[in-house]
Image (tube, rainbow, N blue to C red; front, side, top):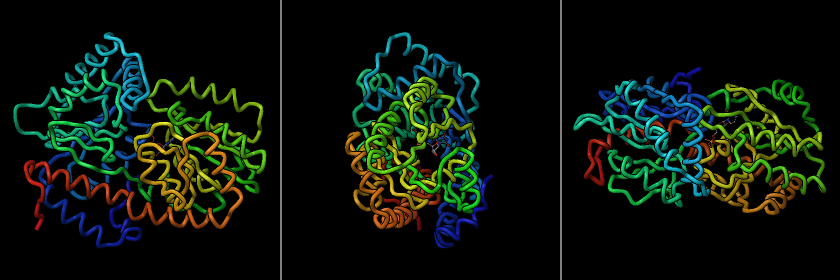
Length: 409
Ligand code: UDP
């Protein structure tokens, strides 16, 4: 359910909403079209499902289209995703061809309606072929960590990327040498969404109970697609080490994304490895389990996001917002959100994660202090209202490509 703009005043203050309205006034004449490759699952779909309604409420004609592909296409784009994140992948000429021809098919059926068209991530990138000689402004919004991409995949994509009017990255270190302007926009969470809103203790208890989780003993949780780059097996290994000293439970909860074909296999591996310990709860969640995920995080003692590669990692902000300390892999955007020793700990190994887990399991005051810091840190940096403002400013900046400073006056 979309939230009324006015409801955000309680969280961020009326002045922030007034500012949004003023900036929106500069770009209301432009239609904004978003294009990505999945309507459900993963951070991009999560963000768009919250951002598009809010932009509409601000008077921007914002839309969201999803490109279509078969299993072969999504196997290729997942391999691209891994390779661009710097995990070696064997990409054959046939795979490049599957990618090119699938996006070409989409180009034949997709109606380009936006004055500003934002293509998210590599999957739809070649749609730039639809760019007419003049008129629309095209933005490539990259959500992944492109700091050390596999050469062949990046060089294959780069000619398309460089035909966009601008590229947007989540962190300065993700930016590439490109001949187009680049902008920095951090992702965000929606504090009023079912995923993040306040819940009453009774409901949280019901959800824990439904999954056989004991509320009296510490709960360590990672919410993620079952993806090797999220390292669920490493989380389990760290938990097992900590478990020797602390009687805790582990929740690994996640669903799939329609553009991620590896999930089933990773889930099967995780289930097999978890089978000998009744305190490990591997939960396969259907799409739209937002209230349940919210309750699982709120019912947790510590949240982990032990990714090996990560674009941003919305799950980190989602947990910090709920006052949970986060142990996160020291990669990608997790480094923006986990401030070492203040909102959580950054780790580089299973042993490091186990060590930090034990530290937190043994120190309630530290957990509470980090929880308070984390909530405030997200409030100041990673809420949807800030993200919407950045997109409105981006739309405005596209009209001033040669200017370093734009006076909004
Ligand atoms: N998520 C979900 N259901 C799941 C697993 C994850 O709704 O079963 C959500 C999670 O709460 C977060 C998003 O999907 O909002 C994942 O975004 P993130 O940036 O953490 O990772 P990505 O999946 O995009 O790599």
